[in-house]
Image 1: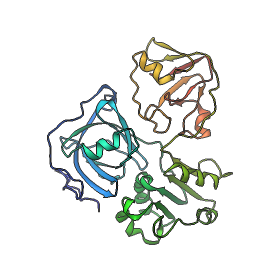
Image 2: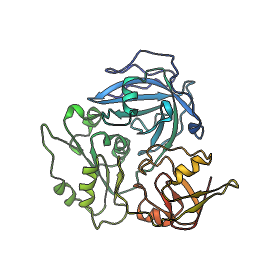
Image 3: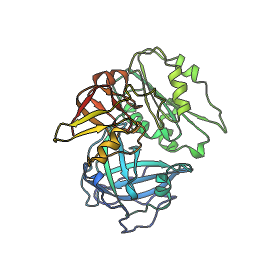
Length: 347
């Protein structure tokens, strides 16, 4: 159950993994966080399912936090400059607290292990964002499909949608109910929610769910690659924008459009950086002393997005739609390159 908000003070301590209050400041404010200048305190920490903990983050002086919309994430900057993205999954109208849920990944890069095992109540954490690459758009009807921790960006969408219409449903799939976070927050929605588990109910029939959709239904899906691929296969031929997904891993991309060097010109400075074959744009910029906040380096999180003023990017990310790519007004330099001899970026 979501902890009640104390608008003029702290938050009640949660159950499970809630730690005792600590004054440690384990994470220094590094240069990469200066773009957003936000350092928050871990106000509460609790277990919400097997392998998933929830953090409540607030301003240490009790100030209002930047506004956000359903689908937004924040960049959490951990020791050694590690940056991780976590979807905001709390009350969109709570101006004092950000809530994120973190899945322990045994074979990950160490960020989730740090959050689960070392991050304590009272610690201060630099934050980037909020940013939204998965925004909720107006639609007549909605189908939300979540796999495991993919429920987190969908929760605020569901809560906002349920406040204005009954024309929505959720399919939430997981290994078992014990591993599925926030089932308690979904109980109140009754028949709008279908829970599929491997150990009990079995997986439902995705074909039946998607084939029965009316043409005015917009589908939001977040979860592991297998689920996304299955949903995408069943939506071939749909109009652009009717299926909206958020990924944990990148899609496969073809070879770069060019195998020769190109220049990246910074519009706000006299600097021009030459990017040679085999070197990424992000790496070349950072080697030249340009600060660009980045995290996944795989084109899935959106942290490193930079505006493009001139030139044609070779889009290689897993975020932009075909329509957005055609605009050529932004790029993700961790993976994207250039089709033209020169790119001018707004840096």
